[in-house]
Amino acid sequence: MSFYTFPNPVNDKAARTVATGVVLVSVLTLATGWWWLLVPLALGFTGRVLAGPRLSPLGWLAMKVVGPRLGAPRFTPGPPKRFAQGIGAVFATTAAVLALGLGLHLAAGIVLGVLLVFATLEAALGFCAGCFAFGHLMRLGVIPQDTCEACADISLRQRETSSV
Image 1: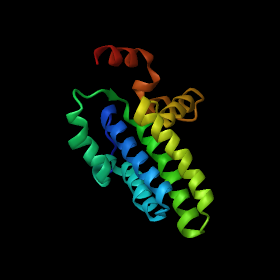
Image 2: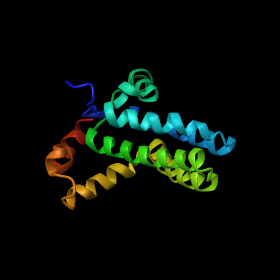
Image 3: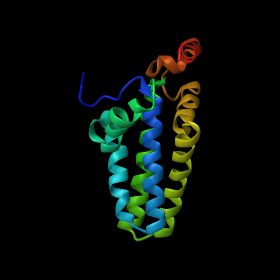
Image 4: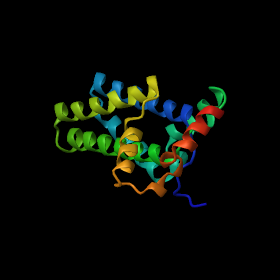
């Protein structure tokens, strides 16, 4: 197993814990103007894309400490979650470049606000917008079906859902 792998399946409770951390950092950044917080936020997303929780303190904490304390795991396919982390990396990095590199705090706040909305949806409701987009891209043929067999085969999803 390579260091640069992403877990599959993913404990959805841990994923929602990570989203909660993203919400807290985003709110703190917007409330205080501490734009430097975008750097660890962007690095965390990038680390999770590259190696799952191994390079992300927040991901590690969610998977090893918080997630297990929330009860039995609820598994969900990993590839859509990795895709969602990639989208988060793009948004967090864009906000960091806008705020810290270009001094465009309003634009950075708007980009971070969009990330905050989607992280809140994941944390509070379990709706992963990146996973939703991933599914549509698979149906359109942009992402190959073999990328996520559990995503492509609805019978596997029904079986996983009913067994949890």
